[in-house]
Length: 257
Image 1 (cartoon, rainbow, N blue to C red):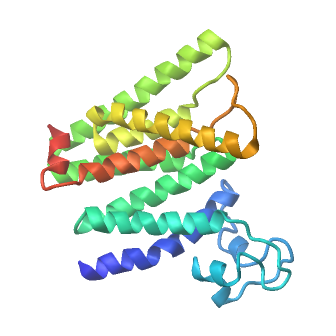
Image 2: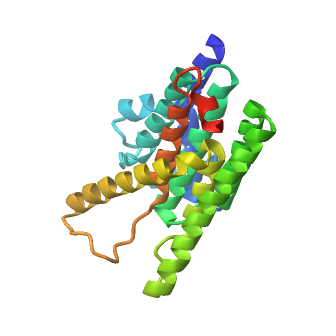
């Protein structure tokens, strides 16, 4: 398994580069590879050594070699995040669960980037993760694991659905998107119904910290109607709870009881 561990760690930044490029153009993925192969300002085709994740960014100081236009820090952030996902998967899990965990983290990262840009969570990502979570728990615990995943997904979606509809009735406007409900359903499918309260609590804390940071940077005080992308905070909470479930020999089995 040492080969798989090294493979995941080395692939992490490259996956992050592709995830960022895909999130930037979603839902149109027809040119996902091409959009990352040219400078978006001068349209100069980037060379192979300009596309090495993290290393090329630092070497070029985040600028195009031809026109010296800044690439921004989004790619660097996503490449580092994808690398950390791979490293955490290798540290916490063994065997095939390393790969499964890395894929979970990378898909959550993609969904977070899309939600941050558009305030919209891709159905393909949320529904795909829900199905994948059910398969993983079934593989781990058989039919009881499948029932456990189903309960987690059902309760996760149901709770946020009720909150969203109740807010709509009371305030006359949307306050929580159903994309968040689908993402919480995915979290429930992976971690089970008993982990939902912890996922929501962590996500709320992350969202508040993120709101405070962005408000401080922009010099604006948040208002009652300030829009906030809850997806990234929810995705981070789901991934951390899944990592926590793998701590110790009894970690995953405890979630099935």
